[in-house]
Length: 265
Image (tube, one colour):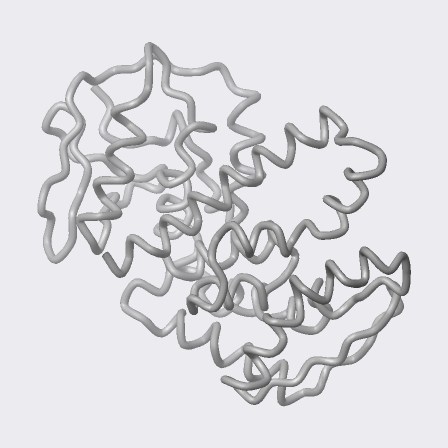
């Protein structure tokens, strides 16, 4: 029985779990090779065992979680597999693999990728019409901007349309400091993996940070990232293919949020 995931999951430390999932879905699914999944203390953390043998990442590192809550969530993904192992249905496992094999070696680069969204964040680009969309953007996005202004002293400039607008250097620096704070934690690689996923899926580091700081809830954050899309759907209806893609992104977003939350559980 295998004790690593190299034949199942991506081996290149991919930092984008959604792309990883898409690639995984193109591969033949391997047969399930275990019957029992357990969480076992391992050092200062918790590992996953398949029929008593510890699981390793594709990079051959021990797959260890700093909290039992996260380990149990990962273990549950393994338990719910059927006759075949489907990596697309195991987003938490893939993200933990990514954190251990990839992000942990590229903390500075990953933090920079996240923070750079502050220079052109979704919530700073507003529509000029119709009035309903303008109001919807205001309702969803202004509380996020207000939070950064009031709690972090970071003011962001909003513009109409898609013309690029430069943001104050001190505001961008404030976001960089918040991301760096996450990276500096003992579980920083996992935190950055979750934050990177939420940022790229929403197109907004401000929404992602507001979510992990408890300013907005998960559903509000997801809705805020799709104000324009939802407005269009009211008039033109939802495209079936686009809806399927959105459902996939939502699944990844929930997993990233669950990952982050489990680090404090």
